[in-house]
Length: 398
Image (cartoon, rainbow, N blue to C red; front, side, top):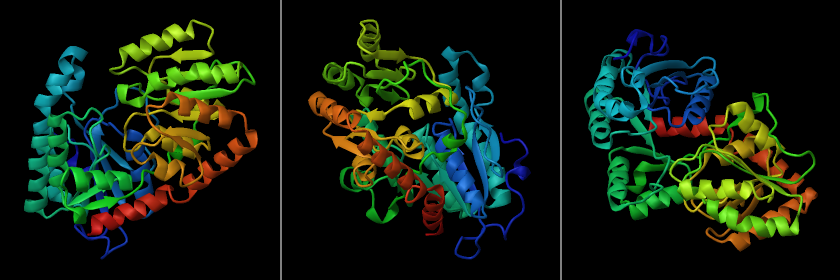
């Protein structure tokens, strides 16, 4: 079901060549639902900048997004029928269409023989596993899989089994932290030889976005929690901590901006606090990119009070934009925030510790400046996309 399969990649190299044989590879990045488009775009652009020919195969975005990076071929090969349907029917229709869309990739893969396929998500685990195993076995095309969430964010027994099956199905599995690697190997039984730590890159494309400032009083200290609001992100822990912060810093403000997904209790409490003169600002809608960047650069501190996670795109946006961070010690957060001096790390589920860290950072402008500089240095150094792309190429070549 891919239109213009011959246009997936332009003629480069000698077809199915490894990066050990040639500095230029054909790479196909697959993200059926476009779940991590900022990551996909940044990785694809960095691979192109290193001389590779990259096609991103995904679905058409349902909300406004920045244009695709220059030089990256983007093909909307998934859910072209399902996404025309009303919301109520779309989810089921996507599930029905997905196997046919996968099969529709095969002619182009056979024709172009990329050096690697890099799969970001597996919407229908069993179907996806069978298909990508077959592509690797029958066509000899290496397939890498990024386990963006080493453990499911709502880890029921069923979801843990599915995560284990997904990761075990691939000989090249990428995770974004040492914590993620430990989880896959020690908890999900994945062969350690197959698991590679490639950090998430800093989302430096946000630097080119013209920011739209949030509706926050001038000059007041601002803490920002940004992005989709899900139960595992710890909004209620932050709300528990906020009265202590406000008592210590009466002019401090808290901006929480993002669409609510599965956390109605936290959202209701947030809106109540926003109406109580507590310095809380609630903006519970999808945040356009310009407003996300505007809120980020206005914030004195970006807070990540998560209960669990492996890594977070919001963290890497904050690094790119040079923001001080206060985060919980979950997943790979400490590997970034603490080890690189970009902020403070506190225990999860601990409102008192979270409040103390926020107060400490808000009261010390020199320390905030040092943290901001450390964030930018990390973004331009170990978390630069050139470094990430180089490490990813090495995984493809194995």
